Amino acid sequence: MQWKDTSGKGTVHTFVTVHQKYHPAFYDLVPYNVSVIELAEGPRIVANVVNIAPNDIAIGMNVKAKPTPVGDRVALFFEKE
Image 1 (cartoon, rainbow, N blue to C red):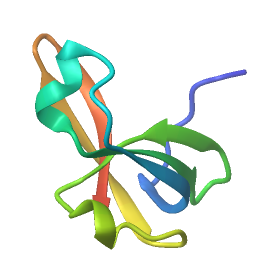
Image 2: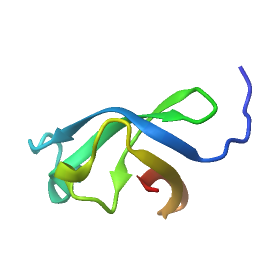
Image 3: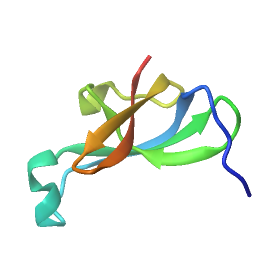
Image 4: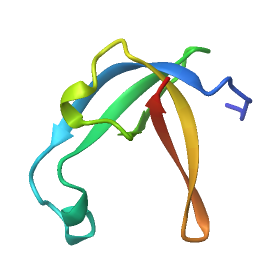
């Protein structure tokens, strides 16, 4: 295994929209999606698609990576391309 740069582009392979409040840290985010993104280079990763209504996410939708600062770290989200 090794780290490789990618284009940051991919497609939604599958997703689920979470409506239940399972953990206090996520209460304000409900509803949110957990998506499997297939990168253009082949690997699949789990991430959120942001800046889109939950009902507008679709399998096969083109997305692009959106690295976002979260505290002192960076989280990887995706948004519609």
